[in-house]
Length: 95
Ligand SMILES: [Zn+2]
Image (cartoon, rainbow, N blue to C red; front, side, top):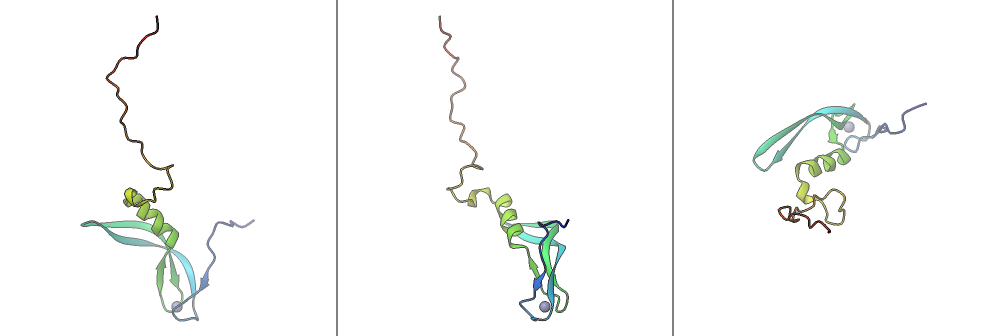
């Protein structure tokens, strides 16, 4: 039984002859003025011309991790709640 979650190789869009195969590379990106390196980042490398493409889903996942504020406001599951509740008021005990 094969792992169906494993990405399938697809034809290279650059040379049309090679096949893009899954590889793990080090991904570089800039966060403001800081250079971020992500080792073992999923990518695709052509076995003929060497063209490399980083996995788009992994990139968007990484972008979400680095920039939590860029998420769309429609998805409220990951949004932190503002702590506006007053904690300094003692609860009124019923008599
Ligand atoms: Zn190629």
